[in-house]
Length: 218
Image 1 (cartoon, rainbow, N blue to C red):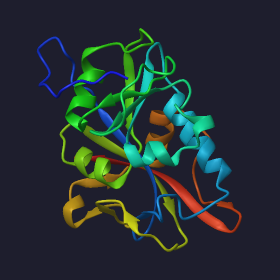
Image 2 (image 1 turned 60 degrees about the vertical axis):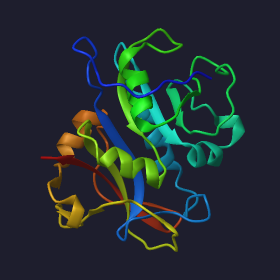
Image 3 (image 1 turned 90 degrees about the horizontal axis):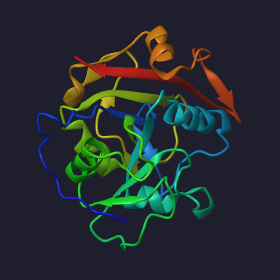
Image 4 (image 1 turned 90 degrees about the vertical axis):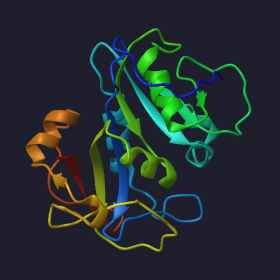
């Protein structure tokens, strides 16, 4: 695995736009005991895969913390077809196991610099960069100007959680508290950005209801 230290983008280094993708309850719960509080949401997982994979001539990247990486089954990691970057100061260094990575960055700054300044092991330019968890990485990303949108799967049923998304994206369609300035976009905008033409309305799987949303910052 390779590492990089954070650096400011140079005039020839484009600033990479960041998109957070997360499933959360209306009380912003996202995790319990290091895993998802809900099970069996296969359509939601398929949506995550399609959205984070879909790109044009470039390639997408997924940025995650060490705990999120560890929570993924070994047979599914690195996440195929995407450049995997793990933010960790303690993860052992070894060569990337495939063209998908993982690469190691000591901080979110370093991860962004890595993706902005190079083509990665695949030799393809990064097209979209997704922050996929956990809570600390989400928090750090939300403090950065590169973070432009949140793809939220709003879980409409409540679950016991011990890990929470850092900001409240209210059901009213406007951010609350520290999320002032964030607004939910029309479903047509969600479809256009993700390429998911069929999204819209409430989905139910195994007794759990949820809806796909896209939020952007003013």
